[in-house]
Image (cartoon, rainbow, N blue to C red; front, side, top):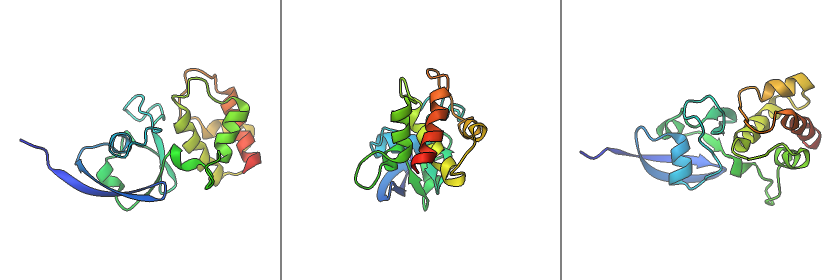
Length: 158
């Protein structure tokens, strides 16, 4: 028996895409495999680590917990969509570079999207608010200090 496919229109990073997916295709898999946007990483597949975080209508969302068919009529922003219009690094990306906010880089896309939304909602976070902003994302390499510095630097750059 073949699985029924559904026509899905996704707006990702300002571009509309039409794909055919099974009903249970995760948004993370649709982004990575159907649209070839491999910046969204999949770590735990349980919504715990935050590596797959994308913005859905501006809100940080775990792409490993959302079905692609549920993302119809939403605006999705992945890490690939965080650059400036001229292709240069966006403020959060630039801050990560300046503050050495990454090591292996696996968790970085989820942090970048989470921080982008966090700074939109709170453009001048205190040190504690910067720490709280990233509390839902896990990193096994950095010890978080440089990521917090990157949040504070991105606030200055924005």
